[in-house]
Length: 321
Image 1 (cartoon, rainbow, N blue to C red):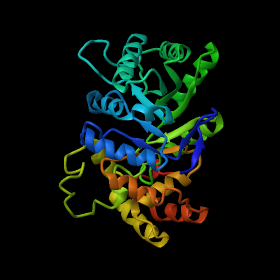
Image 2: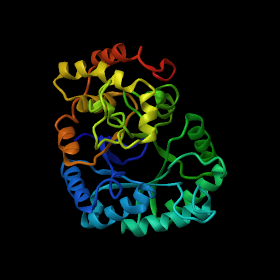
Image 3: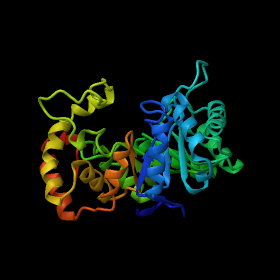
Image 4: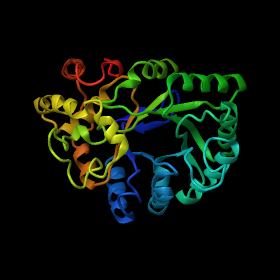
């Protein structure tokens, strides 16, 4: 496993990280344990969750499973989504952040979080309020680093400006979606994070499974797949001609001697500005198959071939080389 510097910090994280959205949502604790052990034994040291995954079940399962392995990993979770019926049980107010972090710590059975991320931009709360609350958590020792997820470049830049103005800890990482299908971050986010030395932990590097080749044009999706179950965000991805892009990339994967999913992951890890790619595993083979090739890197010529094969497919305005 390759370990990469986490933005401007001294922390090092695995180039492939484990996403646990499936824990407690699609798979039970026993199945989660097998995947977690495989991931950690294979060299993954960054484990990502959120307080809303499985309505808290993901954090609870991790808390039950990590035990003595807690000290060996970089544990990341998120705050923003609704976690109760109260009027203040969502968002990034000081009130909600302080309550949510205590609940996450309790479920995860830990005294501290290595990375605490705001799940998305909150237009209803002043950034200064959010950042002061997060800064307090760092100073209290409950959080080591703070990060953002699903931020636009201008939102991250504004947050950095607020932190600099008031002497607060800044967002050291960003977690956006990124794959051969979804390349929107290349336009503004990647140049910004490279300029400001921000870590980038991307999710859905396999295009929500589309790039694995499980979906074929003109065929019904596999019965146990997320598309068959009607996942809205996957259906939105298909509007970008995702299956056509997957079909175009498949011959390139075969030429390299990699499975389509392995090739898609290698592509993400070969792109500039990427710190780690989250592997959202729900089956042991998702780890074992990825591990066979997660140290593979594509050459500049191979990256150009991907551009040539895909840039005329889908939305040219959001797919940039």
